[in-house]
Amino acid sequence: MTPSGGARGETGHKSEMLDSLLGLGGLMLLRDSVEWEGRSLLKALIKKSALSGEQVHILGCEVSEEEFREGFDSDINNRLVYHDFFRDPLNWSKTGEALPGGPLEALTAMCKRTDPGPVTIALDSLSWLLLHLPCTTLCQSLHALSHQDSCPGDSSPVGQVRVLGLLHEELHGPGPVGALSSLAQTEVTLGGTMGQASAHILCRRPRQRPTHQTHWFCILPDFSVDLQEGPPVESQPHLDPHTSPVDSTTHLTFNLHLSKKEREARDSLTLPFQFSSEKQQALLRPGPGQATSHIFYEPDAYDDLDQEDPDDDLNI
Image (cartoon, rainbow, N blue to C red; front, side, top):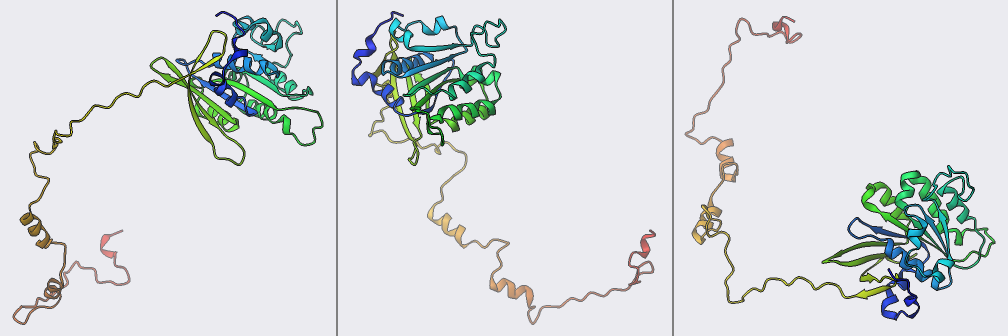
């Protein structure tokens, strides 16, 4: 990639998606996949925040600092505060450059910052943090980090805090992904078709219904975003109006339709389990010339007639 400052002269068309994404604070999830990576969009958001004068802190865990800074010009790199946990995540070298408590302590330290003005914190990536921290601990830290600008009783001049978290959702089950999703104010799900990338944006605003947007875009080598039109919808097969529809019942071995006479015969048929009033009277009241039947019972020698012990003949 060739470093360039082309983002300074972006048109409204090119920066529309970034402006809509960076318009809110809180936690933003960038959900990517193996096919559609999200680190380029994360770097595009970081560049946009740095050019707007915000403080940008990066918690780098998944790639080296040199690889992450590649593609940014010197002006952008000078504005980024990079916390490197890729080279020595557990501080085994004891150099003192990394916090001894690891990424969790770095998140806690960011929560306690007192610098005024808006701040963007980029986490590369949440998937790495989920593999090294309990999900509940990470969610509590993210909640404190993304809501520190509205903590009651805090007199420090803290501005709006925006947390950008890259999440490789294919690496995790529905539990951790759902927990992080419930904390996020904005979710960006990356996808695409026919080689063209898309971003489905879900925004949750307080006391408002969630909104959905879909943008088709391309990340340029200088990490500016070029919005594009979506791929054409696949054309449906054209049906000739003069062609009669095919009847799927023409070649069946049985008939699904009844003629008028067959329908009348079916409606007039009395089913065996249907008792009409005439049939009930015939069964309950015998006719005048109809013989009545009686049952005569003569007890056998082995019949048990003892009412006190009816099971006496069972020899229990």
